[in-house]
Each structure stands twice: as C-alpha cells, then as structure tokens.
Amino acid sequence: MDIIEAIEERSSVRTFNGEPLTTSQIESINAAMGCVACPLPGKWSMDLQRFELTGPQRPGTYGVIKGASDFLLLGFNGTDYADAVAAGFAMEQVILACTQMGLSTCWMAGTFKPGDFGLMTHFPDGMELQAVIPVDVAAGKERFMERVTRFTMGSKNRKPMGKLFFVGDWWQPMTDASQFYESLMMMRLAPSSTNSQPWRAIIKGDTVHFYCKDANKVHMLDMGIGMCHFDMAERYRDITGSWQVDASKAPAPARGMTYVASYTRD
Ligand SMILES: Cc1cc2nc3c(=O)[nH]c(=O)nc-3n(C[C@H](O)[C@H](O)[C@H](O)COP(=O)(O)O)c2cc1C
Image (tube, rainbow, N blue to C red):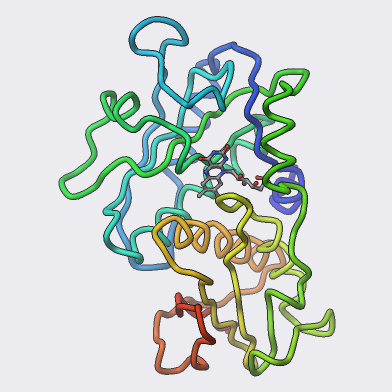
C-alpha cells in the first residue's frame, strides 16, 4: 500500500480484535517512530506501550475503545501551539505507517483517562500526555456504540474543498485548476478531533499559507496531522518544497483564524 492509498484507506477504528500486537508488528512501529521527520519547529515525545485489558492497570477510555491493548502515547507541552502542530505532524507519520501495515488506529485527545495511561510513561520535563492512540487489528464487526459515535461525529463527511482552501484571498475558493489541488485533497481526508476540520489555506503563487480555525491545543494537533498529509502527498509526487513560519509574509487571517505555517515549492 503506498502512502496515498494509506491516506485514503485510513479511518478511525474503535473496536479491535483483542489480540496484542506481534513482536514483528511492534518492531515495525518502533522503526516507524525512529524515522519520523518534522520540518516544523516544536518538541514532542512518543512511545508505544502495552496495557492489561483486565485488572487494575486497564486503561480507561469511557468504553469508547474495545479490544486494544497496545497504545501509542503522545506527549508535548500543552501551552505551546508550535509543539502541538509538530506533535501532530510527527505522530501522523506513524499512524499512516500503521495503516500501511494493515493495522487500525484512532486518535484520542478527549475520551481517555490520562492518569491511567500516564502511569506507564514518563515524558521529558515540561511535556505531558496529550493524546493516546490504540493500534491493533480491527475486529471483524463494529460495535453498536462505535457506529453511533461515527454517525454523531459525521466521521465520513468532509467539508467541500472550496470551503477549506482559497486562492489569493479569503473570498476566492480554490478549484481543481490549482497546482496544489491533489495535495490539499489529501489534507482534507485527514482525521481531526470531532471531525472539526479546522484546516484552512490560501494559495499565493508557489506558496500555501495554512491557518487554523478556532485555534486551541487540540485543533493545532489537527493542523499538524493535516499538514503531514499535505507534505506526504507532495513528496509522493516527487515535488520538493520547504516549510516556514512567518506570519508577516502571509495574507492576514480572517476572523477566527490563526496563522500556522507556510509551504513553498522549490
Ligand atoms: C486530535 C484528535 C483527537 C481525537 N479525539 C477523539 C476522542 O477523544 N475520541 C474519539 O472517539 N475519537 C477521537 N478522534 C477521532 C475523530 O472523531 C475522527 O478522526 C473524525 O471523526 C474523522 O473520522 P475518521 O478518522 O474515521 O476519518 C480524534 C481525532 C483527532 C485527530
């Protein structure tokens, strides 16, 4: 499965087959974590941990997740938006590698009990556990609760391209004539908290300026995840470019938007 197929294939899974990961799957995930590269400034820490499904160490997810004992844990400093963006960008590379291995995942920034998970990992000073991600083989059948969750969040739906991405200014929706259409299409398929899709972008020549709608820590994590998909799609097409964080060169944000970063093709 290539990276574009992985982006198209991935969806959040909350019911797993109950079997722990095999040693070779763990090795592959550890290798993927070792290869993560992030072109944006920011610090994070990630880990893969196994938990008991029964007994006192059982991690609490308010019943959202069933049958997974292996979890990716993501830590960063929750007060710095740059760390949240970089952490999302980095971890999504691991998520897509897991998809390529035939494993399923579900980002979780809300429905887990940090104390239960935090006991197992000590992040560097100043970093705290911010997200956990079960990773395992999906169960054959979705639970009723999972179907309800996906339906309530409208998980299958994505906003139209022209409502997320613009050319030149905020009043000019992007069309499929844009050179960035394919890569931004991959951003649109990214997962986001409550499927909020806070990604917005304005194209100016060879540069895409990215903004976050209703910025907060979790939406900045969503931004990093979406920008990772965009970056992967550029690389897949052998297009090279560079990332910068320089608000002075970007069009002014519209109301409710926060500038995040810019990408320029070489
Ligand atoms: C940063 C982040 C946090 C999330 N937190 C939760 C969560 O706490 N509980 C949950 O059930 N799903 C959570 N999700 C999954 C989203 O609901 C899901 O990505 C979205 O509905 C789109 O569905 P899809 O991933 O199947 O495409 C989270 C996703 C992201 C990216």
